[in-house]
Length: 318
Image (tube, rainbow, N blue to C red):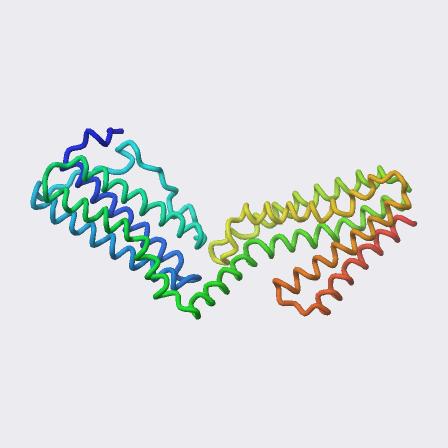
């Protein structure tokens, strides 16, 4: 890598052209990646892409006047001092907050580059253009805010909030709810069967812990391998698998922990109370995020819980 202070004016202009071209393509990727779920924000980034394109054109015009037609390929990774950016294609599906944060960081870095580059040049026309671009980058964030206020009218903001909520439900709530339901319900049978068969709190705890861990691992892999999220928009498969697996294990551990109480009778009472609490939480989540009527959600969850609990009691008492 080359030190920035050793660059000639020709190399500085070539680097500036490369940076503007990269930023232009990044904003184009942002606009394209957000178009389906956040069309208004996509319009904002498309406008920012056009501004970066104008900067690049002005730099090329000046370079052609000063140094001719050939522009050497000098990239950010060839010069010390630049922050390495995560490739946009690795960020899919794009999160709006992450995109806006990266765009803000890009503008700050580009502005500082132009300010430093202008201080290192002696040609009046080159320095004037670099100073102008530094000033434009300084106001770019304000321009982005103006574009946001212009493009994101109240109805557009509302649409984007609906899209954000839909993605949150797809990528977090659904796998988490599936795991919580499986962990809270499926582990009831082995846990209470072992408890009633052995009358031992410790034995029941070990069975419940094993069932919770096994269910968490199984559900995590099943969710991660179900689809890669590219067509369904459900997010990164391993992130969903981690959420689903963790919630499955948590759902099982919740009513397993009470069996650490030495008194078997007290442990059973507390465990049953925890089961009721878990089923209530599941009912609320289904009502809150899945738009399921409260009575319908309560009936479905309670029916499943009672059937599995009854199976465990029947097997453990036989």
